[in-house]
Image 1 (tube, helix red, strand yellow):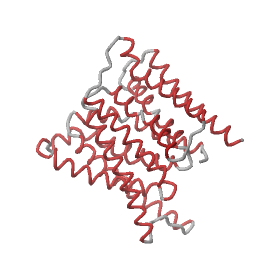
Image 2 (image 1 turned 135 degrees about the vertical axis):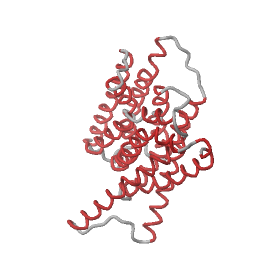
Image 3 (image 1 turned 90 degrees about the vertical axis):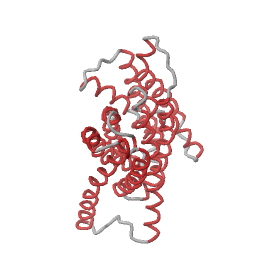
Image 4 (image 1 turned 30 degrees about the vertical axis):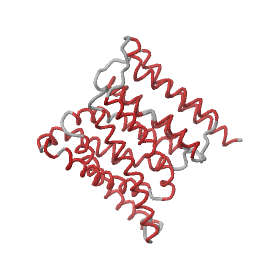
Length: 310
């Protein structure tokens, strides 16, 4: 696959939005269950993306007479399959992440979720997409950086890093996000990115609504949802509607390992947003970890560039 600077930039924007959403998820978890939060943000994402798709279709049809709507039965079937794979992986991963974040720290949550930066290249090998040797070195740098960024303070304070219920759900979420990234890598080049994004959110919204009705309806009322509404809107519009669309478009033409390295910057951005917006302090070891993650992205791009020149 060819790496594209514009696509990498889109994935960076994706990481920016995801990184600033951990706080919103934590706030939402204080008021509503994982299924309710996920259902609300997903329905909002659908509402946001529908007029965008309509506008893009009108522009394409007016200026070049081209439409990317699924027309034939085969096209519609392929879109349905793509939506089921991408959407179901996203639903399960997001539900595990949202449930787990109520039982663990934001730092550990961001670190454990970002473990897909290691899992994706491993899965790529089994699928016949062997990353260049230098990319594995970048993955190692990024993993060490994530550890210092998210867990460095605990190391310095001599705190024991125990595995708790929330941590287990975050690890499960990382495994499932790996499936979502690999599904997008397969389906996105063959479909309209914005339309695929909406289709996967339809699947997420339906599955999350069923989950909320079955397990959370008795413990959730409208006042809880209204209390969580600012967090739900932020997650629904920006993290879901915008960021996941950027992921689908950005992953087209980008090596999946390089894509995950870029998207893993959400952990760095999450820490920086807490520092700038919430006034949380960052220790030198955490700054070093964030710097290592950024360096891994730069090196991965240099490595891909060298491979293309050869």
